[in-house]
Structure formats: structure tokens, C-alpha cells
Image (tube, rainbow, N blue to C red; front, top):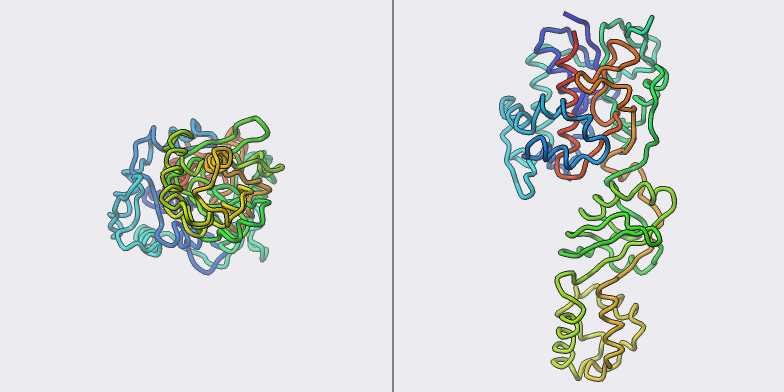
Length: 409
């Protein structure tokens, strides 16, 4: 039996603690907050999309950074295992559109309560308001930790589950990166991910709150395509957000983080330019006596019409029935390419996750143990792995936390 310390009582930490305790180890969780699971609480807008009900290949395919590193973890603890785990701890689960799994109650607090029940059941000791300042080691072997108040705690193994830098109010302040660097680990460059974007055009403020469904987006750096996708997006007071944009931030965000890009929105991807022209002719004939600004009700959300008409450069008071073929071409071009200048990703405080982290080259993928310091394990967001939205990032936390807890000798 080993004396195990887990740093951080989030998703990965709670799972690691429960798994290690079930195997007979003496486990203490050191949490610098006054409660567990602060980031879990806000996940999925408070509903907690805790996994995705897909197979291992599905999990791998939705992992953006270092997917192959996670094969062992995903195989050791699958999404099915995650759902059964929470059911066994008294938290019924359900699966919704896109295979996204939630607690039946739609309350993230029930996921946290289940984890707390699991830790209590298996005898895990929770120490709140306990901030770790350093991981101690001798001769390449972990010996314990030092707390910020100077207290030394001996241990045979330490699991680092401190999260990343997103939502700092939950305690994710990059502590794990500092611990890893002090032990000689490389930490790759970090940035916000699964995050909204700021744009240069001031008119987006007039579109704030407008959701566009079934649109296509293309993000380009000059002529280079960085991302394209189809789905739903949302305008904010100074930019864009929504599922499509969050996914784009994960895939194309490195370039945007360093200096911007161009976002091209096809508002009518299901129609060719010719089909769209025929549709516009039909509508304009029906509204021939109306002003142009009042002739898009069948084609656009009401709140978007003033901005759209302004961007065409046409006279908004001109009668729809007098619009020429050349003017229709301007309208069609804007429908097929409503472009915006992306200036930046939003900050860590708005990011779902952090991209980057402790280099996977220095972690054993079969155990989550450091290759540099025996007895130190890493799990969750602190590692340089991340995935798309839909429950995949929390599954990374469960799987890597489980494998770390399972592997402690």
C-alpha cells in the first residue's frame, strides 16, 4: 500500500483518488479551494456534458492534440465505463443528441456529489484550502509535497491534476505547469481553446444574441484554409461564438492567437448561387412595391436585415421590383460570403479548456507516470491533450485520472 497525494479535486483528481483508494492505497486529496469540482460545476452551462457515448475510436477521432497518446487511457476507462461509474454512485445518466451524456437531473452538482460519495466510500481524505507550492523529489523519485504554508507532506506517489489556465476563478491558475517545469518537464505553449473570437467589424454589436443555424464557415489565413465546418454559430457584442466557432478555435486557433484570420460565412450553404438568385427573384417579385430593407423577411433573421442590406452597399429604400441583375449579384455574393475579420481569441476566463501543457513525450501513456521522476503522475487538462466539445475533454479527465490511479504501485 502506497501513501498517495492527489493535487486538485477536479474531474481527473477525483477519479484518480477514487481509483487508487479502491486498490487499497492511502489517498489524500489536496484542494486549494474550499470545495471540490468548481470547474465541473460550470461545465455544459451547469448541466455537465460529462462524456460522449461513443467508442474508443470516436474518442480518438475527436481529440485534436496528441490523440494517439490517449489510446491506453481511453481503452482502460471507456465512455461506457464513465456512465456506469456515475450510475453506480447514485447519479442516473442520459444520452442526448450527438451522443452527449448528462446527469438525468441536468445538474452538474449531481456529478460532483457522486464523486464526493465515491471518495467518501473508499476512504479518501480531502484537505481543503491546501495549496501545494512544490513537489519534492530525491534521486529521481517523488518524496512528497510542500504546501504554501511551509508544511511538508511525505508521499510515495503524487498525482498532478491541477487543470490548465481556463476559468481561473475555479482555481485553474497553471500550478501544475510550474510543478512540471521544476521537475525538469517541458511544458508546451499554452493558449485558450474552445473559446469565442473577437472581430474587427463594429456592426456585430447590432447582431448580439443572434444565432445562425445551418450555416457554413470557412476560416482562412490569406489563401490558406485553416478550418471549415457546418452547423450553428452565435454573434456576441464584439465577436462570434457558438458550437462552430468553439470547434474552429480548437483547430485554427494557433494562427488566430498569433495574429488573426478571416471568417467567411455562407448564410445559405444548401443553395447554389443560381438557386439563390431564383429564390431572390421570386421574393422580390412578391415584394416588388416594398423597399429593399423590407424584402428579406423570408431569407434572413429580422435582426440581421439592416446590417445585411447596409453591407450590400445598395439603397435600402429602393423598391425590390427595381433591383437589377447586377445588384442581385451583390446580394448573392454577400449571402455566400458574409465575411468578418477575426482579430483575437477571447481570454482564458472565457475558454472551456487550455490547449498545450505538460509534454506527452515525457509521460508514459500506459501509466500516466512521469518518465523523469518516478512516482509523479499527470492526468487531465494539465497534459498537452485536448478535444472538441461534446463531453470529450471530461472523458480525457476520467480516463487519464483512472489510469493514473490504477497504475500506482
